[in-house]
Image 1 (spheres, rainbow, N blue to C red):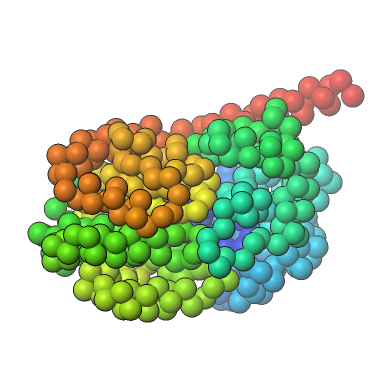
Image 2: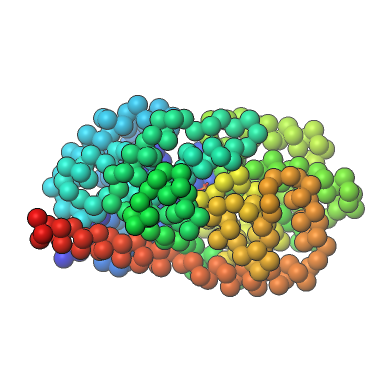
Length: 413
Ligand code: UDP
């Protein structure tokens, strides 16, 4: 008999394009781990929201993976969902009752809150992954960024209490769960996310022609959601520093910012375009629409460097994807990026967000092609340590462990 698990990811659907709006690394995580779990003999139902009203309540997404829609009106903004948690929680409870799930695994605090009641009532182990945490974000806000609200901090604290296991992406995230949320260390398990090592490869690094990009220029990319926390402005200002001190680079450099606007600041993309214009960098810095996963490897391969200047990051899938494609990454030395990038081997970690510090790192890399080549080799090697198969295996081992514990405590009762 195949085991059945329910994954819960309510505020964004796995059917949405990642890299814009609320869809990002978590969407990729859920779908990629679900695919590997299904291949390992588990039936996976993903409880989520409808992207449009025409969608049926249940979609057969792939063999042994179904998408089950909760009653959340399309168009409801993420910020509005917390007030709907009681209704969604009831809906979830009704939908999972009697379905024979062994484990419920929720992703992000909103889903954890929605899943808690059903897990408790039906005595199903609850596994939770935060993806990001309010307290971590609030300790590292970008300029002008609003802090995460108290309701989220409280919700996360309740989930920490209720979950049978908390999955952290890295040791750093595990430490934050314990130190900032008082999680019991025994309940926190570290499972690294992954990268699709079959699609994200270094083969075909001559992809510039396909993308209509200049073969001679040095290309630096930012890939991800356009929001202050991801730090695209740091890259723009660093490029400006570079142009001021090394004007000869202007003709040889192309910077690509790929992704869609996300979060409360819905005009962030416009603000950044205006900034680029004001800095007279329009020729150098181009903004590209979010692109689908099948095209992303070519963009990474076409890039000489990928920058991830985030203020905090529980992991940073973009960093891993770029490295798997043979592109060194320059990232902020924060959170999961310290694990995702091997400093000096697969890329460079930069302390803080001072554009001058970023510029000095980038100028050196731009002027040292041999070093970039070494880092590119290191990047491919480093990424090989992170496959989704290992992520799914580790998650399933944790599920089994919880089920064994449940059996033991039932036997002792
Ligand atoms: N992404 C994408 N198309 C884009 C930009 C981003 O598919 O145009 C994907 C990217 O490949 C990655 C995810 O969005 O898998 C972003 O994940 P990451 O962990 O880097 O950041 P998050 O969005 O979780 O903050």
